[in-house]
Amino acid sequence: MNQSLGGVTITPNLLLFGALGGAAAMAAVGVVAFNNAVRSALCLVLNFFLLAIVYFTLNAEMMGITQVVVYTGAIMVLFLFVIMLLNLGAPQLLRDREDPKRWLGLLLGFALFAIVAGQIFPSLLSHTNIGAVDGYGSPQAIGRTLFTQYVLPFEAVSILLLIGIVGSILLAKRRI
Amino acid sequence: MADWFLNLHPAWQALFRVLLFVLPVLILVPGSIWWERRLLSWMQDRIGPNRVGNITWSRTSRFVPSFLRGKKWHLQGLLQPIADGVKLFFKEDITPANVDRAIYFIAPALALFPAFTLGATIPWGPFRSLTPIADVNIGVLYIIAVSSLGVYGVVLSGYASNNKYSLLGGLRSSAQLISYELAMSMALACMVLATGSLKMTGMIEAQEQALWGVVPFLQNWHILTPYGLVAGIVFFICMVAETNRAPFDLPEAENELVAGYHTEYSSMKFAVFFMGEYAAMFVYGGILATVFLGGYHMLPIRWDYLHQSMPSLSYLWDRFEGLDYWFSPIWFLAKCVLILTTYVWLRATLPRLRYDQLMSLGWKSLLPLATSNLIVVALWIVATRVYGPMGGWAAVAVAAVILFLLYKAINRLKPGEKEELASRTIEMVDVPPARREVEMVDPATQAG
Image (cartoon, rainbow over all chains, first blue to last red; front, side, top):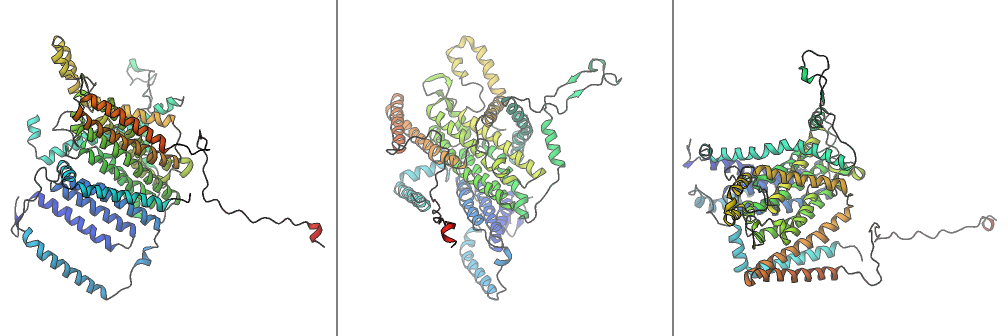
């Protein structure tokens, strides 16, 4: 069962990661490829959800669940609200005309990908058994670090959130 | 038997656990539909569906045994949900024109998905190889995460219906959902703080200790502690709002919005919405039972302590402990049914909240209450660690008084303002400008 493909043994974990990562990558492409704004947003929701599942398979549960709570559950809901309230026009109007410069853009995108990948891939290819150790990034560890080592940034961020809330209420308030 | 199960591949074990949770919920959904219709009817002084499937055996036929001839078997309307399902299955499936097809078709599934997924971390019994489906280190956070996914089904079904009222219903419902999931998260955060663990099994273990730390023969069910009572009530109200049930069902109100976000869904898609709503009610009831009502235990009595303190009656305590252990799914189910009954009771009793009343309740009453409860719990824990149990109680009393006075001070009436006993009026803030003064022309003087 455990065959080898180009020096990498095929394990169920690898297959699972391939499925999830591939679907997430396709969803990410779908975000920019769709003409319909709501479908783009839904592709992004799918991408975030699949990424959260990838985190779960890597034994980083806190990371995954935070991804679901914050990104999928709050930020994307906000995105969807705004898109629905904006009431954008029909998808036909949003399609760009045929432009020869888009091939140049595609080429430059690939070049960027090649530069970044050339730096990352060689060091990653040797690792086949990936996953966090038990307790890495657990709520206990995060809490302990947050309240001892990073307590001042934590308090500063909470004041920033308070400013944001007060500001949004002030902006949206009706005249008294 | 247990060895055979534990030697399976973990994926098969997980599948078995999933089936062991999902299949009973699927079977209990029609049961809860029946129970709701009957109980609602009794509370409204009528009988409810009791005619479906009643069997009247023939009086003269030779094929009927003699002791059955002429007898009537009343099935009390238990087949009514099956009849409903058959009707919905055979109904014409109308898809309106100009809908966004892909989103229109997946929206009911998106509404059903969180209802079942929510139950992955709920332990319905003490058998750790069978339940919960995943005993992760973040059990309570998982519930918060999945309940925030419930917004998608609602808002997408409202949007995809190509119907202004559905869109409005969907947006209102999603605003309601995100408002009440905050207070719900705060209530759960209180219990996490009090317990010290995010695991659901950790919640149950914390509720197996002595009540308030001092009463040794009673279990520390969280609803019996002061902070747990407040958090439980807040969680219950938010739970009713999260499942869009009366009195929070403005988004699907027939009078206002013609059934709101699921207007344009007929037959099976509507059945999926319906099923998702009842499954969500059940699973949220399970969460309330686990976090606040002691989970799968029968009574808040610690049988092992009674074993030690009254060994003469140990035969009796053994019987009770065995009853508590082996019938624990039944006790869990009983608690879920109790919470479902309370849901139906609320629907029968309370009138629907208007949208601004709903939002005001969520933001101005429940969220401050839940947050101050969190502060009180934190204060309790610190004071108990430093000064002992009595110091904890004293600190909590002082904190409760301070918070109550603060609440009164913030909401005090301005001088000259009477207290409105029933706030039924709506204040118009942007009053339209007064019309131009109409000139009265006297025909007698102008005609000439």
